[in-house]
Length: 379
Image (cartoon, rainbow, N blue to C red):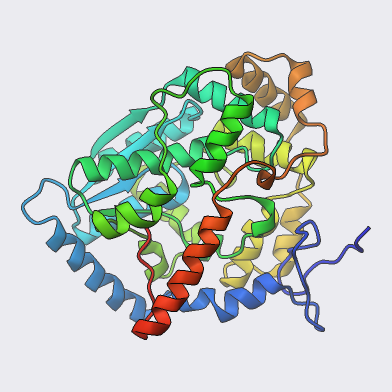
């Protein structure tokens, strides 16, 4: 068994099977953030100039249309704060919320508060619950680590399809490097991998997915970016973004209320990240979340270690959430407990797009060398 080790700079540890350490005990995630990720992160005047130019492109592309961009809103910290900034920038977004059946009451209230304060139009796409339930159960039976794929995939898929049907080229995402700059790729496969999703559902599902929206490999890497000229942009990477300050500003200006934890807006994600992953796989998502805050300068390592000592769940809260989860999916507590028993499976045990993805990366590098510039066009 591999000896336990934790990074001396962040708090990532050997629960990531691919982690490596230099002689000073600093992990590969920290080195990658410093050497690669920082090149895409501009929390400074340069970022302000870059974003101003990008915002002008968005306005120009949407000239003469009712909306110039689509903003995906979950009610979480990142997307809600982005909506507040979009209002300040004077962009004209159509706000799209994808309801996959797991919104907390607080998430619904926060979405309403954001839309009302910003005076944005809101379109809610409601996913067919019976199909969503069947896909969730298929993933639980498969026993892979990323149980959030059914939600994540349909969220982005709905945004892309809705954007193209309304001739909108730009999607604004709250994804950002300040709070998500570190993530162990060995823990999960790609949420956008429709090949993997369909293979898992084909093996373990019980009903056809007639309305559940997916994005193929061809659409994701070629059709949307090259034919439809679509771009997903992450404005929070072009400004100073401090999570605690963002929450404080939203509470004052919009009456937005904090969930107390990352991704607390989804009852499914809350239970998945704070109970399923640690119990079945030994993965604690607080490690990359807090490590991201450390390397981006928002938290000290000592403070993160103190935070890590807090329980993932209060016992009474956990029982309430498990009871709701079982009732919602119409399964027994015994079935739920069985789903949590290790060991789990790796997503790669099912057909996936990994070989195609590697080929695209090789072709991309060759094309970059030929053209003498970086290419980053996939949506």
